Amino acid sequence: MKFSLRASSRAAVQIEFIDDTSKRNPEFYARKNTERIAVEAKSRHRRGVLNDRGDLSQDSAAQIRRLYDSAIGQNPGDCSFVVFIDVNLPLTPDAPPDKRPWVAEAMQTFGDREQEGLQNRDTALILTNFGWHYSREEGSPPGETCLALVAQPKYPLPQRTWNLLTTALSEYGKVTDENECRN
Image (cartoon, rainbow, N blue to C red; front, top):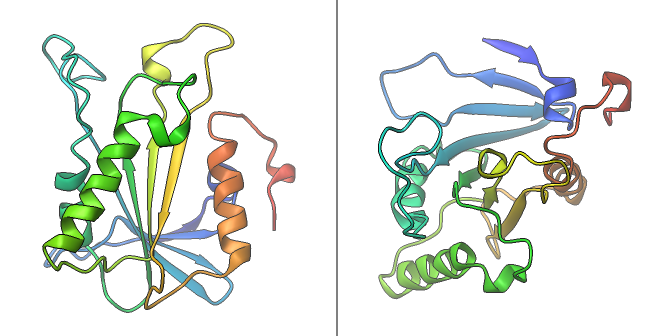
């Protein structure tokens, strides 16, 4: 199943969803020109937030290790593989990125995996925290992101693709005209 998501993806890529349920697959493939990128997306579910019943828990663990370990099992192994994890936590606009608890948790995850001798088989992990549902007031802070790039991935992404991706992440939540999308 293929179609183009020009305005919503902001990166002018074609999205190919995968119908094969006989094995673990990524969420979809993103294609642009000759590039093919497998994408897997995970989100932490929290009680009391976005249709999860129960009282909002104040624990701040983003469960990155569990979500990452699950995501890398979706890697097809024959192209770039980008994992997105939304940590689903209240925004922390006053904290520098390296002082946010979920960023520290991600760093600990990679340190633990390295100590265990586990390889990071992806091209990159992109952590997002688009907690718009925690604060809907005008002027609420924008979402937060953190990119963890593998030093020497088997299937690297060109710089122009990273540029498109970081632009798309920085524009999350903004409504644009399709003519504004980059080619």
